[in-house]
Length: 167
Image (tube, rainbow, N blue to C red):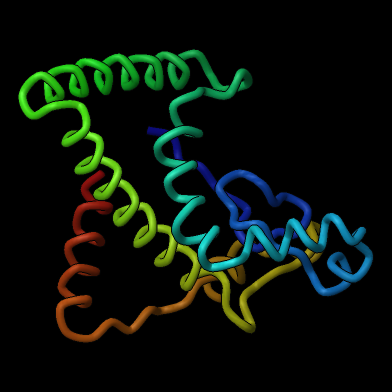
């Protein structure tokens, strides 16, 4: 599997997988409409409730036209598997019950995942630089934080870290 380097913290290469972030100068130079949409996008209700449902239930079901063929094929096969699973589970427990369960789990898991990503990369002092000053090592060391969980959260964090290291 190829190693993919994501330019985290590079102000000139934002977009793929990022939470929309503007610098103070960019925000100040933005139109009223762009500032309003930025504030709405970063509203906790939209950012942690609506956005995860949209991203994981709708957005990721449509492959990018610029994605490599294997990736587009994988998304299509996943969609077929999801349709088969939905039809099967709907036949067993009913469509309404299935959707209530599935959307609730998707909303909670998506919100938790987005929250963890957000707090790890969106904090005062996080590493953000323009391309000419961006450094891979500095981005790795200063571009994310350590989220100190207590109690059951630390166990959950350990489980997630183990699962992601296997994948």
